[in-house]
Amino acid sequence: MTVKHYLQFKDLTLAEYEYVFARTSWIKDRFKRYVPYHPLADRTLAMIFEKNSTRTRLSFEAGMHQLGGAAIYLNTRDTQLGRGEPVEDAAQVISRMVDVVMIRTFEQDIIERFAGNSRVPVINGLTNEYHPCQIMADIFTYIEQRGSIKGKTVAWIGDSNNMCNTWLQAAEIFDFNVHVSTPPGYEVEPERAGLYGTDHYEEFADPMEAARGADLVTTDVWTSMGFEAENEERRKAFEDWQVDADMMRIAKPDSLFMHCLPAHRGEEVSADVIDGTHSVVWDEAENRLHTQKALMEYLMLGKITP
Ligand code: CP
Ligand code: NVA
Image (cartoon, rainbow, N blue to C red; front, top):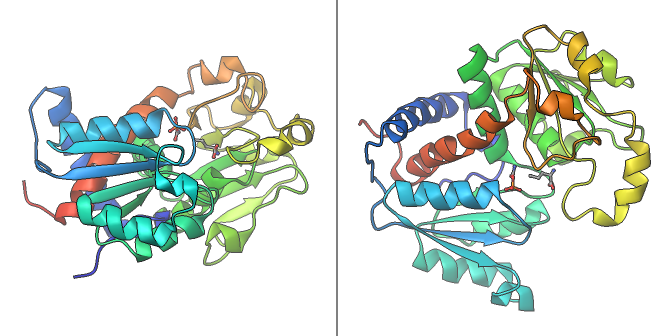
């Protein structure tokens, strides 16, 4: 039997996302009504973190408990991974002891090698290249608030990082458009983003033009984890790429603002935007929990009829 992994956004088809989102709504509704649901009783999730996390750890750990299973937190510092044990060997061992693995690491190649040696599903909890669990939650949040995202315009303002790459993959699957504006030198690299073509995004030199008429405006930190040495240089390069009230005014009147968090108010977003009426950042964060529970259920149990 082939094992199904979730290493980048395009690992699921549109039909699979539609199924996972329907399960997300069902699971979320029961959770809100305090109705227990334990389809993963006796199953164990191993979570391997090579970078910091609040939301990803909490949503996976709490989610696994809520589904009746257990979660184990591992990090580089305390495991043999930090002392150079090959990732292939770690995958062989860890995947004989647990039922699903979530990894947050550096290069995508690391998680690909882990998955290639794993007997159980592996989930990408963020790599330098991608953050699929976050975009899954973001699109679920958009649909919850505004209906279908097909044909809509998402403005991406800032760094062409793991979040941006994943939005671009999602645009191909959900058939929406991304208007990207990055400072010179930080443009999208289509191959690194894992794109099939360039039909679903357009690049804008002026961030205001990218935001014009957008249904959703979104951004992320100027310096991602692992790139801290570039912090000062990036702070200068990105200073005109802040999402502020003027930018939200040029977007559609009912546009949403999203940020995966953690955010730096006064850098990539002004406080009045992230704390203002367009912002759905807390719903986005909460939906990490519900969407990932549905994802784990799907990867481990396949399609089920409740
Ligand atoms: N958005 C997100 O992945 O947050 P954490 O880094 O806190 O997990
Ligand atoms: N782009 C950010 C996302 C953090 C959740 C980073 O990789 O640090």
